[in-house]
Length: 241
Image (cartoon, rainbow, N blue to C red; front, side):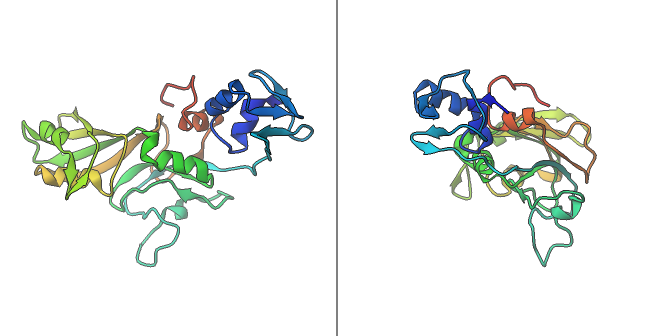
């Protein structure tokens, strides 16, 4: 079946659709030896698409999962010291998928799992700037706590990027919303400890525009094509879903 060339390039795992469109504008893509243009269509079963002279091959189908991780589950495929691991929750999933990043055993919320290494790298690499939001229930909140959190630029000598914080619920107990574009290991808990806050609950509520809407704790679902495109940073998918 014929599809737009940029869609076929993205589906093959070469790059995002937006990057594929740029390659087409630059004249780097050919179909059966002829320079391809935006809007051209092709069929990978019949046509040869090449980028910089290298033929494109159809990628095996990938799996993309959104899991609402409960507390008490480790983000690993195997850990003899963990009472429970997240893959125990993936009943019915036929693929071997890997967690994209981590949530501590005592943390909960949105966790992405996939067997697509290229997308995982984009989501994890600091240059991707993928936004993640957390709701953190705390005790010990003071009038200057938020300004002190926002002023932090290092943790134990490790530099960190500025973090957006606001009071999400006044409580009691209060809930602070953290927005990060790059995360270090246990960063939010370490930040809170630094300014004298005790974390009572930590939940990731959003990543790359995806949310937990309608997904109970311990359950998972496959991502839609629109959601996968959103994670790749495609244009036209700016709303949270």
